[in-house]
Image (cartoon, rainbow, N blue to C red; front, side, top):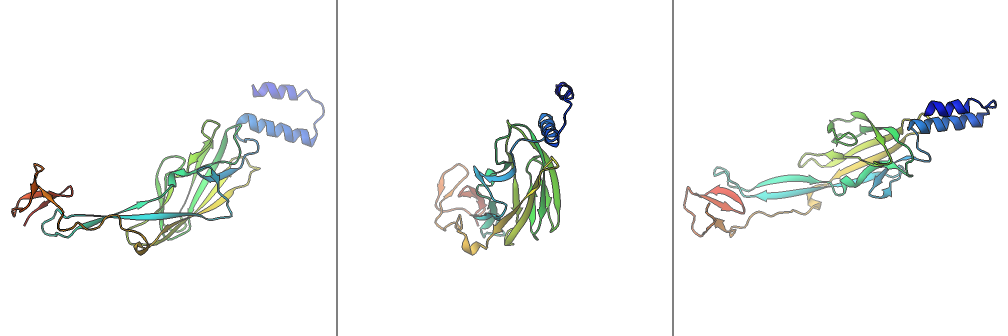
Amino acid sequence: MILRHFHIFAHSSVHTPRMSAGFALLFALLLGTLPLNARLVLRHGDQVLSPADTVRITVVEQRTEYPSDDPANPDPFTVVDFKYPDLTSYTVGTDESLNAPLDFSALVENVSDFSLQWCGLTHECNFLSARGDRETRNARLTTEKPRLPLELEGHFEANRYGHAVARLTLTPTAPAEVPTTYVVRFTYAAPSALPRIAAPLAPTTPLYDLAGRRVVRPLPGHIYLRAGRKFVAE
C-alpha cells in the first residue's frame, strides 16, 4: 500500500522543499512512528505533569506489632511495610490523542544514594541500587493503549530515612523530536512524623485455645491463640 502511494507521488514533476517535507511527514505517519501533534508526557491520573516541577511522592511507613510466638523472646515484634499512595496512577502517554503508534525510549537514572525499583513499561522489575545506575527501556504507545504504567518506586530499608531521586527522560523514536525530562523524588520521613498503625497488645487481650474456646487461666506449656497468633503459655 505504501509503494502504491509513492508511485502516485512520483508522477509529480515539481518537488519543492515544502512538498518534500510533507512527503516525509506522510511517510513517517504511514510507518506508524510519528503521531501528529503528540508530545510525550508523564501523568498523575488525568493531570499532565510539568517537567519544570519535581514530582514528589511521599512514602508512608506502616508499622504493625504482633505478639511473639517465641517463648524465649516474649516481646512483641514489629513488621514494617512501605506504602506508595496513588503510585499506580502515574503513567507515560502523550498530551494529545494518538492517531498513529508512537515508539519511544524511557531512561531512568538514579541520582541519589537510595535504591530505585523500576518495573514499568515492560513489567520486568530491576533495581538501580547506586547513584549513577541507569536503564533504558523501549516501548510503544498505540491508539488502543495510549498510556503505560510508570511503575517506579523508591526502595527503602526500615529506619533508613531520606530521599530516593530518579531522573526520567522520555524520548520519541522520531529523530526530529526532543526528549522530555522529569525529576521524581520519593521521601521516606522519620516515624516521629508518622502515626503508628497498631499498638502493642494490651495484657487484657483475650486468649483462646486451639478449639476456639476462651481461656481465663492458661496452663504452662499449652498453646493458645491471642489476636490470631499462636504462643506457648509459661
